[in-house]
Length: 260
Image (cartoon, rainbow, N blue to C red; front, side, top):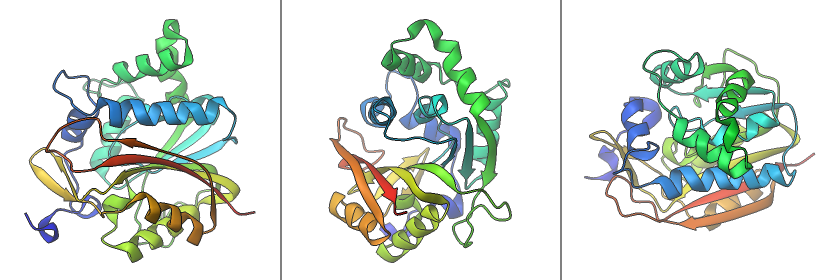
């Protein structure tokens, strides 16, 4: 399939439950656990365990209705706002947030988070703490200068974004504009924690094939420098699985601090 025929996540939407089942579930045939579950959780746990990120208010702008990367964050940030492109993802998250019937089962990730923290006897506390920290789930639109419009959010102490910029950007220029709009929501001195799929051109959710802007580690690092983000930390994990659902070569975790 030609790349121009791939669907655009932020334009066409996706089946959010199929996305979760394919990349984040506890199913035996789910091939991505090392990359999509363990790597982000381990990296974020490391950042917060050494005290590199701090504050009270955090914004998350991540692909789909994922929450597993936020367990450790909720221990430090008492106010978390989630920005989502799709009403379907907002509905999915609200089912989990309010513990409604049919909510996605994230128990396998709360168990993994507790194990990383050495508190396996406190599994329920992981989810309860995160639920209490999430204050709003809002629609976002990167076509607007204020991507959370009409809501005007206070500047965040920290922003975390997983697999979004490369999914909503068609080329380098769009990536840079979207990165600039993201850090407009960040306080001077605040940190951006970014999780990026490297050298990826497509991914599937259900039977639908989606676009991804192909970028490498050097491009992302240069992009941080161009928008005034000083790199505090980065790590790359080479792909650990074999699957035709996505063609990424590696995942990058990178932390940048906005200039004062």
